[in-house]
Image 1 (tube, rainbow, N blue to C red):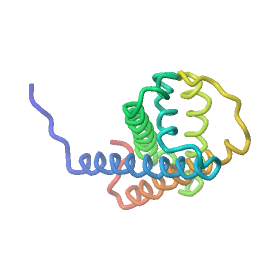
Image 2: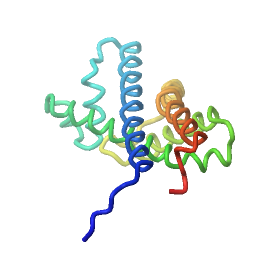
Image 3: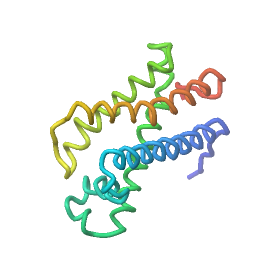
Length: 168
């Protein structure tokens, strides 16, 4: 069986997607840690990532030590990577419907929030929890700024530079 090589444009797309996943995961993680500290300085960063890990491992994530923090960081970046990759690859379709990259960023932030809070978290071991308006608003703003905006700006630049082909 012959191994198929990837083209330079596909290679650039893959590198861009990995970079976006790292960027959005880092921005979102920092925002979560900062917001958590602002609202309750007693909550340490490890608790945030143990909470993320609890989506898979349940309550054991809070008593299993540093490996759960690592698992939480991994899941956090994995989710950020997936959302960034999907948004980046679908950007051309969004841009055909809505010609404003900032509006696209806002809409995608809302989509990410809805998917996470109405599908992913309720189906995880965390389960459904009541949605509080202030927390939802802060979460939306964080996702718009940390995922929607960076991906929209980079995808828009690549798309209009002719380096990104949404049809491939």
